[in-house]
Length: 131
Image: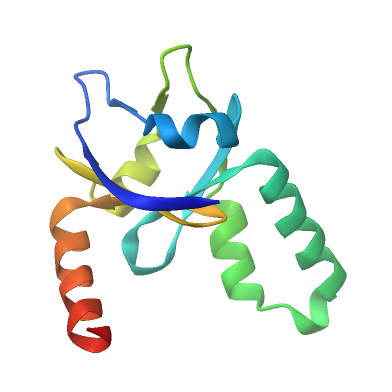
């Protein structure tokens, strides 16, 4: 399970380190894709396979074709290097507007990657709604 909120910097090669608490559960390869609210969703490969199987079970009639297309067409498999860094494909960095610093959040079965100003605005909205 992924929980917590972390602020990290992106290096000159557009890589960033994942929180140490997340690395073991993520494994060596992950799937990153477009998420809701212009963040990125990052999944362990085993979770991504489960999601894919669930979508397949729903079939073409029951699944939300637009969301499935949005999610799967934007997905990329990326490797975590030996010191816990990943490189997000450029089209996904552009989608999320990732610039220094970034926010990495744990959300149950996935990790979310946010532009810091987008996360701040979103978090304030949540805080006013739920606090």
